[in-house]
Length: 457
Image 1: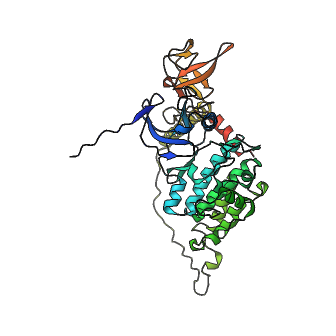
Image 2: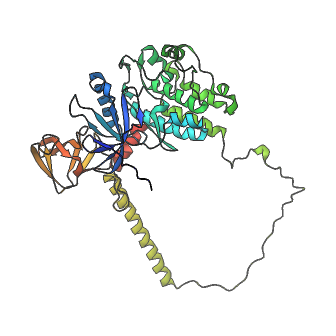
Image 3: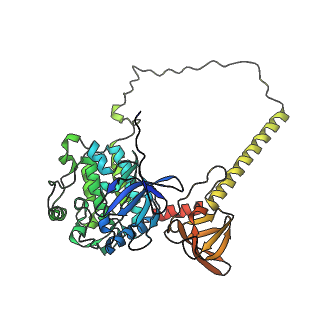
């Protein structure tokens, strides 16, 4: 038997144990796999590289990314759990949802082009995540395969909002770089013009082109001057996917669908990322009708001379009359079935009212809600102190009882959440420990309102 030394993991940000080696690296940041020692939940922890820790611009961009992601709530966006930055000299950490799979970059490098049916399913998710961001007045500006992670083979999550900014602005320079990754930037990013949702649509078109062909839209050798790649986005037309990879036998409709997203002028692209995904899915469905659909030209022709119509009339059946149950028994049975139906309908109405009002159906549906800025939380302790500062030594401003509801107003600080609530005619603002609060599900009414907001143009 061979004995192995125990792993020497270290603890950061008070209660997160991380592995020694990072699982990802970028221009300024490192990402580690970790574990929350309080909740026993696997997490990803992102931090600045040592050479950027004391750079004020890098720290500001790091905070900006965490706060942008914290205000997003979408199943295809990696969630932010915590931001730990005690002072301007200490190493900052942002705690993220751990996404266990490969990146889209690794998937394409290992297995080549993505199957069209699977691509359609994944494109709808990426488009929905970007649309969620666009509806909040922001653009991602760094959509690329490296920033799309697989949660499972059919589910992806969007990450890295480090250069995301408001739509309608000129992309701000970041450490001398005024654009995202050159193979995926839009022409307006490359030329320094105003950026908007159309910029992300172009970048998403670049990603889909690569998912279809296994190659970037403009092919250059490694080490090519980035300015040459940027110039290609401004002056060259991409080769249609079917011509780039004739060996893949791609359907002809792919050229039109993908190249519309890659139009040089923003106004010539799809109006939204969702419209792009719907156009792709619609073309696929039109090209592949259901198996049960058979063209009329292929149906066998009916020839009455060879297939005469013969009608067989069964002889009448004569038999004894069968008596049913007594009238009283029939009435009793009918009454019991009506009673069962009334009770069932009543329970369904009660469940619907409970879901509409609270978002919970007792005993059947009680979802766990991740806490983030803007959510409502309920107190789980019998009595909870509201403190003036995010620590056990902070002055106690008030005490709230079990099941009291509070509103989260920002990001956590070392496990403490900033909250506000009404007490009589006054509004109390303070900090509460995250160990003693839980997220309150949105009511069915709020969920329906959100659906209509998402559908609104």
